[in-house]
Length: 571
Image 1 (tube, rainbow, N blue to C red):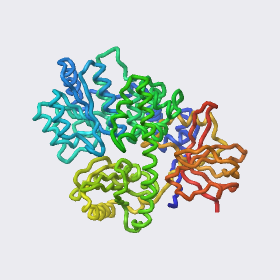
Image 2: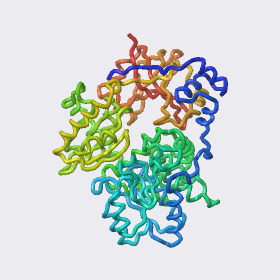
Image 3: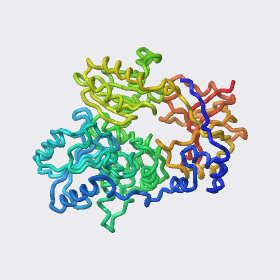
Image 4: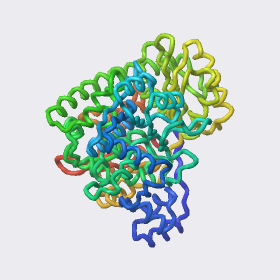
């Protein structure tokens, strides 16, 4: 897809004023303005990521009641069950609360559903078994907001319940839990509304340890950062504080399982970035739950035994390779189906179904296709009488709202504006495809489908220095809501390829050269460039680059890598 390069507009007078007020280079001031920061006070708030920036846990609706329920259950030796989800957000939320409750002396267990056998969310069978085992307090994490019938059943079985979640509420409103922790509910005064579930769990943790002088919020920031980045929560406000501090905590984590996983990925003992979580750690933790049971990943997050941690990390690494094979085969098949079945002049939403796809990789494939074709994508794995669909969207189209409009064709659904899941009967798929495209044609402006690269301004490669990178990293951590700056350089060339750079599973690596002959390693994402892209075709000629500079850490010292968004050959 041809991309439009667009430099973000900004008044130069405002740039100079903010630059002088903060004592930072004009380029950094420009980047702050692009992020809505226009005054010294706003800049101080944005750049300060001190842990004192967290709001009081008591502001979260029902949190004091949840703390009281947990403390009573612990003091009375009641059994507690934590039920989570099989993705990284759900697993880190479960691990965080389980570790916290166990350290308080609680009689606590946990349950993660099997993606294929159980599906998403709280199930009555789990509640029935918990009641039979004597559980008195049920805590759901990353699920429960829409579990009305299941929570009523839990109360009939004599269980009190705490829902810890961040998903959108149904029109019916608050679920019938004893305590409902979700910052999206209208009654909640907690200022940060865009927490991942692990962020809500972390807020509950802060409430539980407020009166304990021997506990510190640093203890589980590694889990909080891992789940927040993996769930693509916006890195603003409290999420930004959690992730910035949590990356430092994760780099030096004492949790045996995380240390083993970092060692497997050759990242133990070095500084970490959000990309390390997104592309290295999160996919591995997700791998077990995508193709089977997520219990292995949960055990990795819970174990304190070094030998067990090493064995679990090996199993996860092996399963991640298997998941990669499934993913590559499914993506190749999906691209062929797009070419055969999709009419881009009429289909604003790509809807694909196939009985050869594993449900565990459907979400990944939907995300890859949404990135490549810049439109909402729905991928449905057909398996018997009920099929599982995963959907990913673009900025101007809310999936959860769209699915609400076509729910008569679905068995169940849930999710966020950018990502959602559902189940559907196979005979309803054609009706669903037609209905969701009709909603998209009514609600989506055609201009939203144009692929635009928003540039932060020109930056000659010669200005990429260690000092510049230190200034740039003041604006981090980068991710959703605070994207890495994208610059344009028109002074680049790709030297004749003499030897291939080391293989990267993330894309194609090659060298880029500035006017002074200085070489940079560049990385072009595989899923965006397509199968036929060939760097040799561009060799020796001048090129314009749209890129994000990233500082990489290695045993031989730091280096600057260019993460390419697009390449153009001057006319």
